[in-house]
Amino acid sequence: MAAKYFSSRVKRWLVAMLAGLVVISGLWWFATNSFKDVPPIPASAFAVEDPPPNGEVIDRGPNTLHIDSVGIHAKLGDPVSFSSNHVLLPSGDADTANIWAQGAPLDSDSGTTLVIGHIQTWTSPKGVFWGLSDVKAGDVVSATDADGNNSGWVITGLYNVAKDQLSSDVFSQEGPRRLILVTCGGPGQAENVVATAVPIQAVE
Image (cartoon, rainbow, N blue to C red):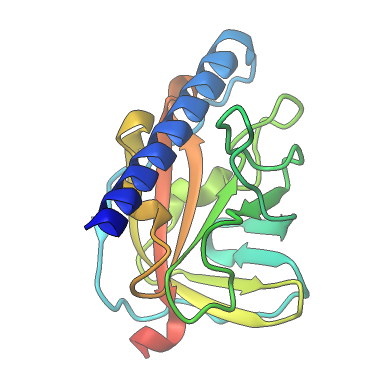
């Protein structure tokens, strides 16, 4: 029981920290961002089991992530952790996404690999995850880690949620193998846009 209690506390802490981070980030953008394009949110949410893959897995070299259907072509930077100020942010580059260091790595057999990427930066009106709100069930994600291990994923879900409502499930380090992609969205970047995917082998 003690271990379960500790796990729940950790999950609540992670969610609270991420929510605090992104709300602060969103307020900053609301106050300072002069770009005309408002960060998008999904037109409609979906959750589908075992959708047929719509595309091919392509290896474009180490440390990359691609969703060709929506024009996402990301470099994978160094893994990121919560800072001492309880902040979890992608690297400063608009074209770079980052894996959460405490989650499952891309070559893991279980658990969730969480990848975060910018929707906008101060110098880029459209960051690397701008197209995330447009993914559809069955879209293929190709990801290659630093060692050149290539993996294919199929999009199974998409939703947006207020940042203080982000589920602790996003941070799961156990359970079925999943890839979760997260960015901001909406006016002032006040929401999270979340896409979920499973290994392509699981639906073939």
